Length: 333
Image 1 (cartoon, one colour):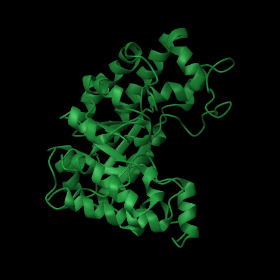
Image 2 (tube, rainbow, N blue to C red):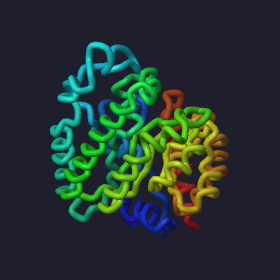
Image 3 (cartoon, rainbow, N blue to C red):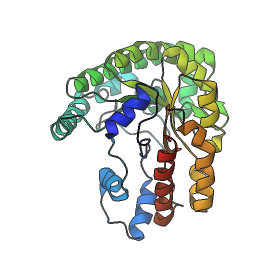
């Protein structure tokens, strides 16, 4: 089977591929991880695709189209605000929703389409979600106050983002058909959601309900990427039409086996506990045995549950990939 066919088997048919599961890394490696591997013999400067090829992972193209332009004033501090006293949303809006970000993505999409006339390479389109985007503008602390202090402005921001995300989809779907539309959200932490169900229903859900059908009509499967413990949020997502979740961080308590058992229509990606990777083959094999029941469901693409950390040597990463290959075949037998 081709990479594309394996993805379609899972995403569209919720069934196991005939030969093996896809072999990918959904969230690419930390910069510090790549530097370590370069110091341990991996050629320097390979870039994202080059690292995939070096380790023999399946080709998978992933694109983030940001709603924030390069000219936008930076936050006042790390996780700080872009809007607030002295700088309003309307003042910086000229730096947001840039057409050049869409056109750049369209240019790359044309290059992929020209190289892949048979459309064998899976493609994922990543966009700002309706929790992430206002937080990026308000800053983390002010964002939580904004739900109460300026709800009208929150809706204005997300209404603008909704229209921009539609333009992104329109700009790409005439060129190629992404397999996944994924919202970047980070709406949960290690104890669960960062907001109440009422706040979700008022400020987030309405925009999901408008954009998700738009994406699904174009043939995309819709995922939400949120770190931390996603499990309490899953029913909220399902109500709005979300089809899959990632990265399912084990150290936050999330369990891909439990999730796929509890929600028989849900898709999942991630789920492999990255904290086992420095422990060597025995620890990693035990983790694959733990998640094997999920791998057998036909609704799960295995990947490290966020990003491979710099504590993982290139030798241990090679062991992980050998085991990944073994279990991706074992799951379909």
